[in-house]
Amino acid sequence: MEDLKLFYENKGYKPYIIPEGASNGIGTFGYFNAMKEIISQEKELGIHFDKIIVAVGSGGTHAGLLLSQKLLNHDCEIIGFNVCDDEEYFKNRIYDILKESKRILKTETNITKKEIHIIDGYVGQGYGLCTSENLAFIMEIAKLEGVILDPVYTGKAMFGLAQEIRKGTFNKEENILFIHTGGVFGLYPQKDLFSF
Image (cartoon, rainbow, N blue to C red):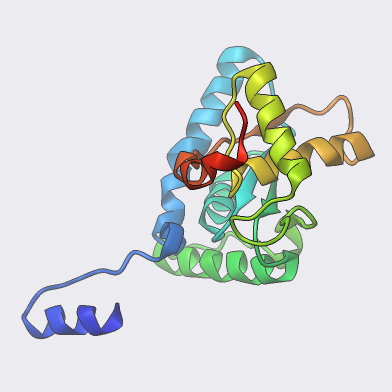
């Protein structure tokens, strides 16, 4: 990619490389409006979300939510379920993305690595690969709730959330918002694994 960028720069163009998942300082700003919408809907519905849960595959969504939560003074906790790599990798990755965002904004939001909450343990067999238990969970949610989850991102995160609820990780009185980030394109290549 860098070679291609250099090629076009030498021709007088100004190419910009968008990283995987748009997970960089600029990409985080995409979730600013999402957080504003969440806050607006909380007011409309008379509810307050204590936790916001999201799948973490490249770190940008989690970083964007955390940055926006700080900038908009919302007191919820952003929690990510990693779908690959591990907790330490994503704490570092998200922290680096946040540092880049702060440089662009020319502001200090004082987000520490300690505030980056990743729940590890639901990666399955690796990126894009999940366990038979996870696949059964995805099918059960589709049949019972009509919610389509994918085996790459949302299926792992929702499965992890369900397991953590069963373990008592979350207080029964807490309002939890799960952000479904899509992922249908991760479902189709593995459609043969499902028996809908």
